Picture 1 (cartoon, rainbow, N blue to C red):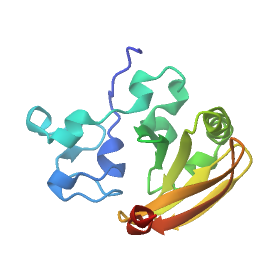
Picture 2: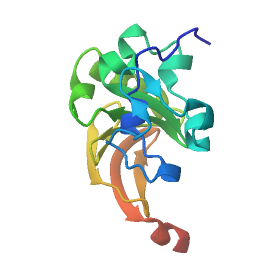
Picture 3: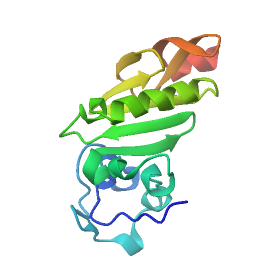
Length: 167
């Protein structure tokens, strides 16, 4: 556990969707004062209370990963890591050292069925040890299906969730 704090960082208030506030991803929350914090912090929605920025708690992400500096917010998902880019800098994840570190995370994760997904604007990119799969816009009613060869991901497609339930 690190002793990090948000400080002047409020990027999560921009990149994350907040259903309780009908706030879409990629737009500033109406309760955020960028660079200062949440104006309703004590009464913020449960989604915000439950949110975990991995930079705050995971020492694998060095000081350079602070979202205010990197323009990237790293979170955990059901099956891996999600790296959300500031919509104003959707290519921030391709800058070094981030791109190389993201590839290393993907390589380490493949052996354990952990995926690394970059969200740049509305586009989703599945990053693997060997390549990147630009999945385009993935709807809330869609799922990413990975194709494996051993423990290596060799393909990825997007399908309707209802198609998976029928299988």
